[in-house]
Image (tube, rainbow, N blue to C red; front, side, top):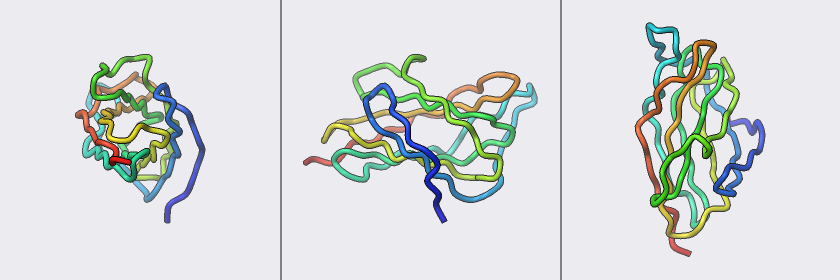
Length: 130
C-alpha cells in the first residue's frame, strides 16, 4: 500500500509527491557513510510527469535528489533533501509540472551523521509528447 507523505517544489519548478512503500533497506559502507543508493529507475508517466524510485539504504537519515534537464549539469544547487523513514524499503517520487518531450536526469545520494554518500548512477527519462 502506498502512502502520500508530503509535497515539495524543486528547482525545475516541478512538484514532487513523496510516496513511501514497504519495509527494511540495504547497503552501508565501512566508513560510516550510508551506502550509495543503487537500482534507481526513472519512468515517464505522462507528457508532464516522471516517476523516480530507488531501494532504501540502511543507515540513511536523508536522501538528496539531484535533477536537471538533459542539457544542464547536475549541480549542488539543484538538489532537494528528503528525510528517510526507517521502516520503508522503496522511495518513489512523482515529478510533475515538467515540459512535454523533454529529457530529465536524476541521481540520488544517501546522508547520515557521517556525511553524504556518493551519488547513484544517473538515470534519465523523457516525458511523452503532448
